[in-house]
Length: 106
Image 1 (cartoon, rainbow, N blue to C red):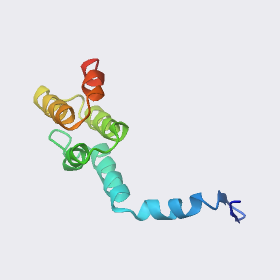
Image 2: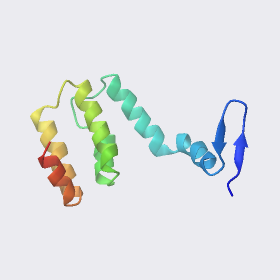
Image 3: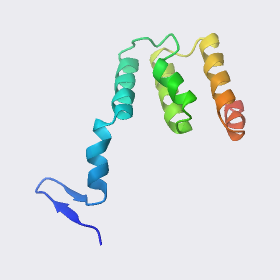
């Protein structure tokens, strides 16, 4: 049976509480948040983002990578063809077989 931590402001399941406490302190979470803020502020959106590149190389979930790519594309008013081809090439080289099929339809 799971323990419930009761608080007048919140009620969190005991199994989720340690995860929620750990997540904001993790390096990856802070780095992703910093990258998102930089992209939203238009900082370095016209070149390859090191965090996105690292996420591709470390085979992080495709949803995570695509979310950041979409954010960069939106804040840059679209990708330049060279930048788009670079990201596409890197994702295809690193990812499994089904990913190129998904990207082909994009």
